Amino acid sequence: MNAPRLYTVVFQAVAITASQDLFMIAPADDKPVELLAVHFGQHTDFGDAQDENLRWSVIRGLATVGSVGTSPTPQPVKGTNTAAGFTARCNDTTKAVVGAGTTEILHADDFNIRSGLYHRWDIPGSEPDCTQGKTRIVVRLEAAPVDSITGDGTLLLGEFG
Image (cartoon, rainbow, N blue to C red; front, top):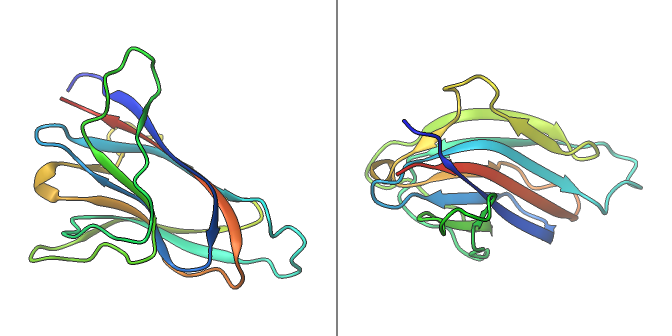
């Protein structure tokens, strides 16, 4: 495959009080995507005496789109790139669900809210990918924080085709 066009999907200053799909990507026809890095941090809870670890995962194969979040416009990393073919959503507290097919959990981990989440798939070929036939891929916050946090997030991904 040729090198992908790189895009970011970003949200800023969002109150996080519930488990949610931080990012949802629906690839366009004949334009597969792959996740390259995910960042999530918060800037409101540093005075909290309770450290908190939150679980997150990457899931492929969801049939529905979540709701209650936003639909940001993916931004090309390079100014010469065309507009993205895929669609994106952020912060859906009504999460995407399984349809007639099977979902695949591709990554599961946790992070401390004080240090934030930064994950990059470094091994070539290990990047989670999705095609239109696999429907959607999400980066999910599996559990709600104990108390509300205000978070920012960036998903870096490549689109082929």
